[in-house]
Image (cartoon, rainbow, N blue to C red; front, side):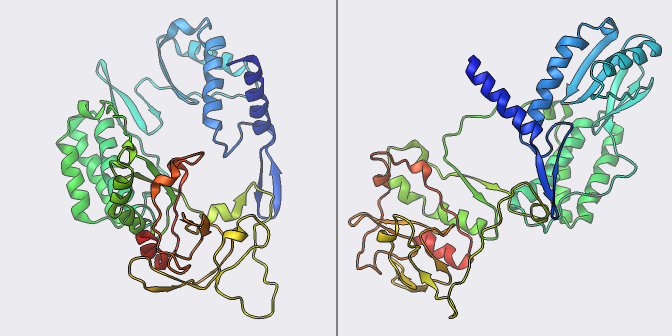
Length: 394
């Protein structure tokens, strides 16, 4: 990285760390110390900070000869120490004197020690691991009827039991640890049959196999990213059902040979409503007439798309001819509205079909290839169930 780019990155990073404000209730707060909370750059910054500290101070310390093993996960360090306890405490004091703002805490034992969610203990001349559970822990597993993607909910028992199989080294303790995990899932509403099936699968896998990293193959499929909502499952089924239209229209594009990879962004929750760092007020629609607002497509009277918008409160399905009423008020600036193109007249249709405008033109995906257009920039999001089926068939 060149000098100019490095200075730019450092300037932006300093701005993020020193200007981190957030809103709680009606009051704004500015964080004065510590890594910026809630920032995506925080884990990376903490990792870099600790790596530099290790290179400059830890590895060159006079106590480093007593360190048999030093394993770190961000700011948590697991150490195997060969030496006297007093020397360990002196090494701890030396680390705390490097930067007064950075405080290290130490937990030491001759028999066992906890590291993250793992308990490491001595068994003769070897070390073994077991699950570590705090005395104040509560069952916080995801509810089975929670509003999350179903494949994520259904795979959660498998991933958690696989973690138990990976951590617990004593085979005599494995069954009891799996029983506790199964009970947690049943208490959260998961079917007994699903939990039992995953438990049997985990028992058939050796602990050595769970520690092997899976080699990820390069996938050329196009990612389809949308905000998760109640229509997501139906929307995915519609895309898969009609994916053959793109495959036939563009046989030379490798990304269209298989359906896309579906992934979701998290929707807004209660936390987003209570705490936010954006000072801009939320956009609200202001009614400027006394009469009830009419439903349909209307001009916003403030953009270049107004001349291409087809107004109306209904449109007709291209294939079935079914009349579909627009149950909302939309303009050129409306969000989450499917956008259609009339290739012969180059007009933009937000919710009106070609038949409503007197055309029977079906959009050809090949028009996106020429010029500055790119098919990867096309994104479709459906929010209303009533619009999902019709939009998917168009």
